[in-house]
Length: 100
Image 1 (tube, rainbow, N blue to C red):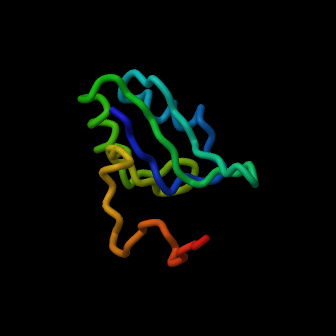
Image 2 (tube, rainbow, N blue to C red):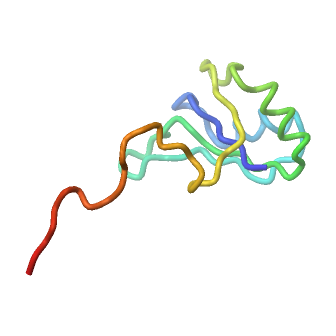
């Protein structure tokens, strides 16, 4: 199961994230998402756990818990195409029509 972890401390590293989830079972990967320009954490990451029951236990236990001084949000990651937009039209175009 792919797990989304938000509100991470900017000091949280992938090893610390992995260790927090390994308390609940096997972890295939743990990734803190970094900003390409600043090299600093964006404050969220993903953890991949092969066993769905262990992953759900981790989600239930770690959601709203503290990691590196911050209360984190932990939930099952949704595939990119299935996220709700929260309103507004995000369609492309930008209102410009090029005519040649």
